[in-house]
Each structure stands twice: as C-alpha cells, then as structure tokens.
Length: 289
Ligand code: DO4
Ligand code: MG
View (cartoon, rainbow, N blue to C red):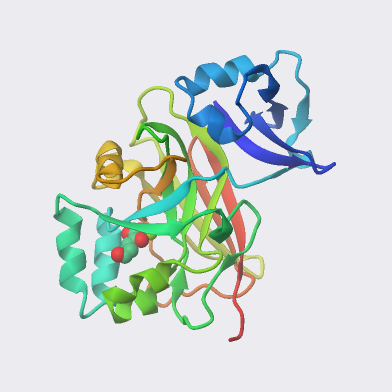
C-alpha cells in the first residue's frame, strides 16, 4: 500500500492511499492522536492502521485533481554516500585529493552518512530543486529512500534526490556539507510505499531521466541489488548514538552518475522512477549569482 500527503483543488491537505489512477482519503479522526502521515508511519502496524483508516465508502479523487506534497512531516533527512560501485568510481575521478577516502569508505564497515536537512530545505514533487550559483558542475542523485520510525524500524520507502555540487565536493572532501546542504538541496516523494514483507532488491529498479527543452539529455538505470550495503545496517549506523524522536528519512546513495561532461542547468526537468513507488519530478532552478 502507498500513502501520501496531498492538497486537493480546494486547498485542503489530506493523507491518502494512492491507487493506480486515483487517491482515497484516510479518515484520521477515527483514532485519537492521529493527525499526520508520520503518525500512521510510526504506529505499531502502519499497514493495518492505514487499512482501518481507509473507509470502504471514502471518496476516490482522480490523480489529476490532487497535488502531491512532500511525504516529510517533522523527520530529519539524512543520506548515505558511496554505497554503489558507480558512485565510488565517480567520486575518485572527481577528487584528486580525496580519492583514497572514497575508495576506503566503499568497503569500510562504517558507511558515509551525512545530514541533508529538515523540511525547510526539502522540496516535494513538482517543486524546484536548486543548483548553487557558485557551482559549475552539479547533478541530481536518484536514491531509494528509507522511512524510519523513532524506534529505528524501516516502515516505508520513498524516492529521494540528493542534489550534489560535484565541483565543490571534488575540490576538497571537507567542502562536502556545502556541496550537499543548501536551500532546495533535496527532493522527496511522491508517496511512501509501506514496508510490508521482504523487499525484492533485484526487482527494484531506479531510473533517472533529465530533460532539457523537451529533449532527453541523460538517462540511466540501476537496481537495488547493486547497493553494496544492507538497508538494515545503514539504519543501525544512523541510529548508533543518535536519537530521532520524530523519525528519519535516509537516502541510500546513488548508483547513477551522469558522464563527467554533464551539469544541470536552469529549467532542466529531473524525473526519478522507482518500481513500486512512482515517479518524483522536479524542475531545476539556478540563480545567476
Ligand atoms: O561522498 C560523497 C557523497 C556520495 C553520495 O552522495 C552518494 O554516493 O550518493
Ligand atoms: Mg547521494
């Protein structure tokens, strides 16, 4: 089952179950202290609660009548890095001084984990994502993203875009926070696929397409079976000596990196599709500086 935050045409925000061509409103008033998507996600049995809140007669609204919002409520957003061979190779190529660090972290027990932001920095579906005006080489990073409860349980999956300034992180690994964390530096959504049984890693495909002026200028694909880390291990490292009273989203790293000659430009359109979840689409903005 997929859940999402939406806004209806009259402006009302709602939590919905997402079907093929429509959404169905969940009636959160049936349960005390259940006011948001994260209240459902952090319950002891999110799929069971979602089924209970889905009234059989509750009206279905056509997909074209709703605007999807970010699935993020008050959680922190984090990201893992260098979790695919493709990312390890790309970082080593871009960073003369940092190459050995990227090489080592790919196989080290402790993964690379970094903080991306909270709601104010994160864009939902259709909202702009930003290329820093002081970057000449920036890319989207399409990432399978875990939704994690305060107790450290993986409760769902969504799509993330970990925007990255490759020239800034390549110049010096200590610039990573500036390459990765700035306004509109990440996208999330459109829905959360509830974790309900084992995930078929080989069947889960991540696809990236970038359009410029209506033409496709880059496309690529990978599968979760290429991820060099176990999802549960990434969560265990994130929660080690840390507390997330509001829960967390964890982007699990990119396995798709465009060729070195490619950089995003103003008005590019980025689409990331992950099997079973949907497609996250965002326009790109860049100020002149
Ligand atoms: O170390 C740099 C960041 C790596 C990253 O974001 C990724 O592999 O997805
Ligand atoms: Mg990344």
